Image 1 (spheres, one colour):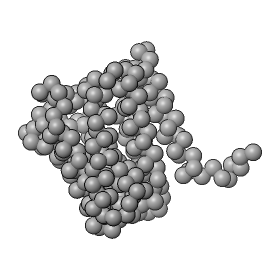
Image 2: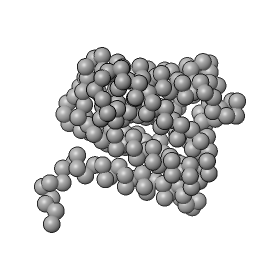
Image 3: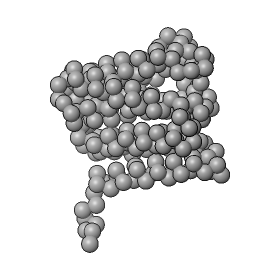
Length: 218
């Protein structure tokens, strides 16, 4: 019999994350609920992001939280620059799916960028503690995440590419940005015990992969 006292937030939270994304996948899979799922995508990403950061907030890891705010500002600014000039990721523009925008960029984008980088960092730290390797691995994990995501994002009008296909420049930018941000985390000697970051990244990646297989078709 399960002792309720043993059901701490850290033990229960990963199951909640996977259940929520599983429900989201089923909601996307069924045409009757797909529009609703797309409508609630922005608040869902925001609320789940806050949920994932609860352990970091509870441990009062202010340095990591301040770093996260700075990374949000940097990645959001890069997105604004990218949309305006095409110089960062290539020429693209956002659709309405991701909700409220500022300077033609959805406000949730920088938040998800930050969580992807943190999740990539935590995952990479499982393999090595060497700063350069962690940074490069983090960039590779973020690159792989975007590779899985891109066809889904285009299909559901998160964003569209002006050239009609995903440019190599985009993937290079993802790798470089994530690697540099991860390097800054290490150089500042920041640490976080928050394993939910890995679960969140994994849940999102599997969600988008399943959407690619069963809905997008490639």
